[in-house]
Length: 248
Image 1 (cartoon, rainbow, N blue to C red):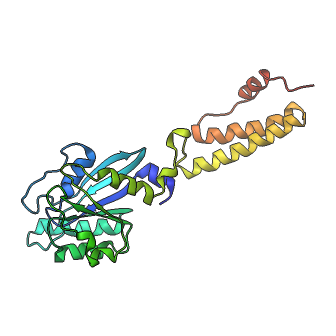
Image 2: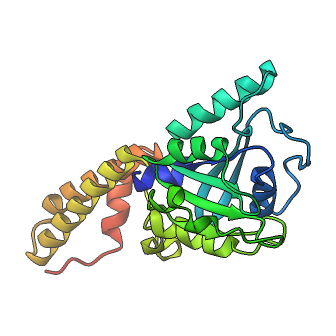
Image 3: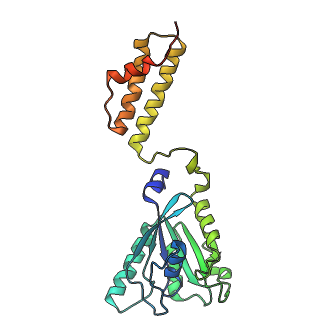
């Protein structure tokens, strides 16, 4: 993903898994609120639930989906189809598995869905039992990051966050050290403005006449005004030069 798209729209992160694997519990744990209904009854989530969450200054667009399984319920079937489609479109897939049980055909279907995706495998419910699914060949051969978690106790969530930051190289972004531009048009105008400022500095160093120096300065203001929407007038130019002594 382009950095600007990440900051503007968020990382489209789809949570998938079979029913009762812990998708909704994971969403609630990340959001730190009871956003999704959690129940032992399979098929509780039939539609998507979307929420934005801030991960160390980086927005994640979290999408909880219907559990992947074969169902005769028409509404649930639509939810499952939607989950499959969203997985194809996702920037990141968090696939969650019940680590207290063996892999099922539905689990294998999910593993097949993520083999060509940027994905993280979560082995959930380690507070109950560790069935060592990470040692299964079906999981190992995908060569995806595997993290053991408990959506109930929140154990392992920090490791998940760290993995996401690593996968998108987001640790290299220092949000608080400056302003980040997420609009390509704005970036172009700012680039041109910087060039004009450097030209103005060179003119001043060479003790050029004021009318020559004013040209790149006016161009600088025009580039910035294309972003702010403010008009550049001669009064502004005159005000700038009235406050500086440019030498003799």
